[in-house]
Image: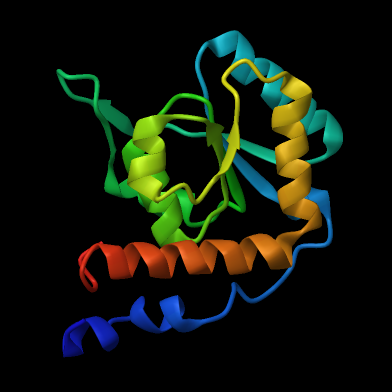
Length: 167
């Protein structure tokens, strides 16, 4: 780590044991969804709304020729407001940004995703039922202290593995 890394606005955030503040109402808990196919996304969205959570469909992604997706700056600003991200569609850029922003990620088991995040996410089998995906969100809501600590640790781990502040 360099002097500049330690004195950047984000550096001190990496040193905190977990995010400050716990949401006690589901109505205040915001869930981001990036999932294909659309019928799956709609079913998860409908079930989460019925449970009382706030739901935001994630957009602002661009796709390159090889199928790699990456985030735009406006998407990063939107992500920072979320409490958890549900991602059935593997997106390595989104996973890394979630780690940096200390946002719990619920995603499918995926070898590339494991390598990109050092397995720091709530993994589900691709064929898991809607109930299991919603159950993952409920787990993050019910155990926010644990997930905040877990995400802080994952963020710090990413910072160290990437060789300093170049995350």
